[in-house]
Length: 304
Image 1 (cartoon, rainbow, N blue to C red):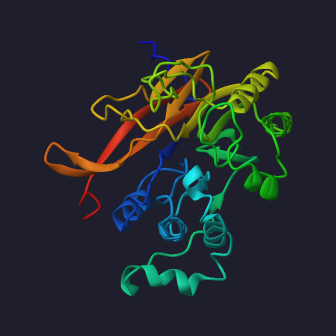
Image 2 (image 1 turned 180 degrees about the vertical axis):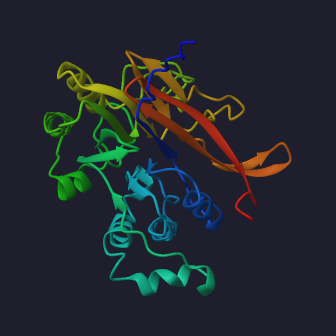
């Protein structure tokens, strides 16, 4: 009797995407992700709240994650950026200080893999699947204006949206893998102009497309080069609409073989069916494409 033939499994990987944190990150999260099967975690920014000092606490905790972590700075991270960068960049030299956040007996080892991203390339191998993460413009607030131009000029020598587009195009030109994923704080233009759309403007009754034009330009340039853009991952525009919080925007969208994900469910820790849950997005990648699902992890699920 002839045996059935099965196509070999395609290599692929799984990424955790954590949207705008706004301080909602605790030891419970650290324990879960350190016990998970994720090889890479993407954080879309806004670690703390505006005018607070909580971003540095979150950044310090992220250095204790065991999977590789890429942190995209958001608009709420501008004021704390020097401190966040210090936590993520000089973590080895500050290992003794980092332990102050935790009880001595529960302090996990300091990771060497947590890093800031922005106008940068990050080739990764996820379970044998090669993909390049292209990190877009930090600090974005969406729309047709370059936000925080002084910080962008000082840190990245970018003075305009045109220069930002040029910088992102140069990154695309340097990619050496056939598959890419973009990560940014805010998503691209071109995906809808209604308030419920994935990056639609919800804080103005006129609505409108509030995506980033330079990110759209980079995505189109990648396609023109023949790269497969598997996914574009960002946040910023919260799922709950500004003036109607009971209404939720669309958080994922498939367009031209690219999966767009808005991970900004805020707050990410909330009550669901009588339990406190912690939210993130599970993104699966392979040569066949990308898929995403929302994960709600109940508090206490890390306990043996």
